[in-house]
Image (cartoon, rainbow, N blue to C red; front, top):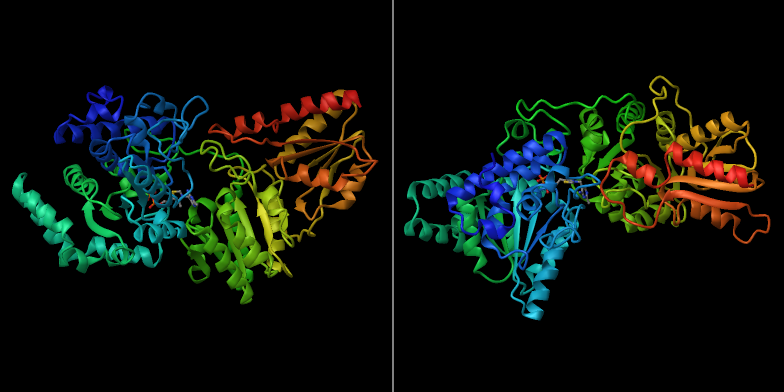
Length: 625
Ligand SMILES: Cc1ncc(C[n+]2csc(CCOP(=O)(O)OP(=O)(O)O)c2C)c(N)n1
């Protein structure tokens, strides 16, 4: 079925292929990717678009000696498939399988681990400078998308590389879309280059009319090497002004053009940028037609392209966020929404549609999103800035320096807090409570259900100073009624007692408190004896009334879907530190290690955060106290 692909176990196996065979291989890789992703979902759209690029790179370069550094890494499926991971790719993003992103410990071909955006240029520059110093002769290539290029880190890399002598090739894989529509001045600039009518008309005409051979080779050289007025006039000046030699744009789904161009560029020295234009979802019609949905489409019928929709028995936290923000904004025109390129993922798209003037998709720029929100707040508006918890790590200093230190009322909504499942180690939102808890003036809350999220968002509309962080997980809530409930403000730092008991007090935060409550109720039903259960709601400030009450028990169990070190467990230990009457404190949470791809359910169970594990823990503790 996969005539050529089945013969490819490493890039060595494609070196002798003709252009025709390489083209056939690309087709087979696409088909295989679609077949696998239909039953085992992943980042299909970007990977479909980058097939020719990846095949051409492995064909021209001497990998793994030469280093291919992918940005984000979600476009690298073809790379995985042709570097010895063809069969295991069927188990992409699963516990028994491989990571959905490049990982250094997974393959020698994965030069640099990734998952977060905009790192490739800096990392590849590191490889290039190392090669210069050691004289290893290894080449370094950064492969970065137009979305990832909106990230400030990418520009720090360009700035540094452009003034260096590094033998670095940056390939700008421009498909004119991020997850949602790409935005911003850079996007407009790139669009202007790739759509420049004169340039494209002339270039394509020349290319396709010449046929293969020396003449075409000569023209290719002129068009891409000489940086003629055509190229210059149509753009690239921005990159040239940063010290790069700019080439392109080239059709990145045209294998022949691409291999010829890469071959030529491979023989040049210094910092070079090749601008290619690809189609996200290329070769699979449904994905080409709707690239945002097909960025990560979930399961689907490969033959028809019909998506198999997950039916959630409860609303998702993202639905609650989106609806409530829109509703609150109808009542208060000072509310504004900020997202660093995750509008549809976090549920802010509907707010954007309803209030386009008060909606800001700022690109993949978490640090900027935070400082921009600080500016909005300083000017008297009420920004709700939604960032995925793990990506917020990019904005740590901005949260301190630009928001907290200036006591500005910004609501930071951290989506995908806790364990995220299949995206794995790079995407878990486990450090937020531990990291941000140490910042003076920050309030950190985690709702245990949809209604609590609604009320916390409402609370955020009336901040008198300082930031409020609301962290909540990916996916489904608890199924509680929230839509028709009247808004209630949550007093900052106030928790709630959920169950009266003895001997042991469970102090939980976030939705995992519901698992603890279920375990406690079960224990009580089984043994006529159960622990007290509290929803702390805030990891900062802590509800000291609850702590004092809980401290009268023999033991406290803290339960959180965040890093045990420094999180709620750390906070409770600090509170009781040095006290002679301190209870035994046991923490259940995310351990001090990186957790790989798996289902969210398995990951929670691995951390002892499922009902069964909590019941077992309770059983042991209640018995022995
Ligand atoms: C720091 C960070 N913020 C946000 C994301 C989420 N994210 C993953 S891919 C992506 C879009 C990237 O667009 P582009 O580079 O153009 O690649 P494409 O998907 O279009 O191939 C975003 C926003 C991320 N991975 N890292």
